[in-house]
Amino acid sequence: MTGEVVASIVAAGIWAYLLLFRGGFWREMPRRSPDHTPDPWPEVVAVIPARNEADVVGAAMGALLGQEYPGRFTAVLVDDDSNDGTAEAARKAAAENPAHRLEVVRNAHLPEGWTGKLWAVNHGLQEAARLAPNAKYVLLTDADIWHEPTSLRQLVRRAEAGGLKMVSLMARLKTETLAERALIPAYIFFFQKLYPFSWVNDPEHRMAGAAGGCMLVERAALDAIGGIAAIRNRLIDDCALGQAIKAQGPVWLGLADRVISLRGYPRWSDAWMLIARSAFTQLGFNTLMLLVAVSSMLATYLLPPLLTIFGHGMAQPVGAAAWLMMIVAYQPTLRYYVRSPLWALALPLVASFYTAATIDSAWRYWRGRGGAWKGRLQAQAAATDTTTESV
Image 1 (cartoon, rainbow, N blue to C red):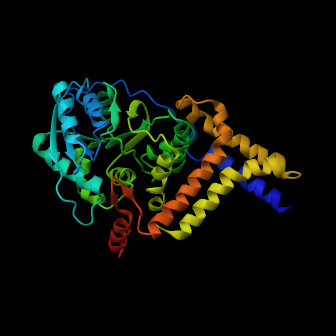
Image 2 (tube, rainbow, N blue to C red):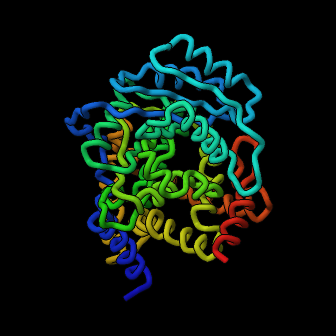
Image 3 (cartoon, one colour):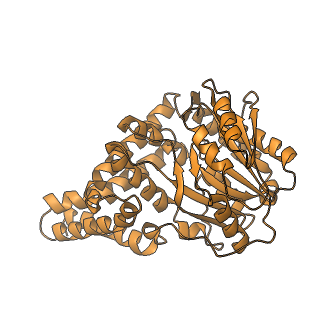
């Protein structure tokens, strides 16, 4: 058996496993919330961290404050040391949408051992406890997320019907420019592969995860884990929170239909930074894991087309079968983003882009530039704190 044949069998085996035994991650589509009407509707308070979001926060807060929610709903926006008029834009939106109350507070100085976003969330939770002490749920959402009018009602329905400790939706991301159309569907596809939603939603499975743009959390469960301080140094905070909350009870993660990110990644460099900011963090700042991840990406996405085009003998049809499985697996994600099925042919090139950005993520970390977000470099501090805690 030649090396080419062995390589083709490996590639086909990988895709057979992904299609059949990885929780059906590739088949995910938005799901309707249960037909359940709580009586009474529980009180909810939202906490929104915002740092230099003046261009989108008005639309996001207008949609949030316009929620058609039958119960009491209050929102707290934490202005995290913005210098672009974020707070003013939020207050203007509140004045134009008085159905629900918005409180805007200024964040305190960032202490050592916290990431900027989580420190802002922590401040917001403290203010939320004062404004809405009886709220059953906390909605953690971002200042660039647009919620359709029934969003909160649907989230609460699902949580109440299933006795869930957390309900999270992966917001629909923009796909307007060429870079976004090429790269963003793959971003969701890779996330689903890493955190299969059916496994996350299975109370008996150890897999946990969440999408930070939209997380409805039971306040009692959040208090039980020690509040947001339990994950204060985590850069990938949504999945860390999902893992902590799942230890308290069942959680649910799904794709959003009309919960939309207003923040686009119009240039190739924007998408590159989306990956490079946190990819090495996802790998635990571990060089060996980086080598494994790069090798896996190349074997999974590059081997099939290379063997199909350049292979010999049995390696060519087996490689073609692996490529066909890849194309089939990507189709539901392309349908979700209303993209042509032919975009699946570009997935090997897109995966190569992601792989290169992952390598750059490690390089940035080694140079002391890791975890850059809104002018802050946080990866080194997070890695140090994680190491200290583990000792």
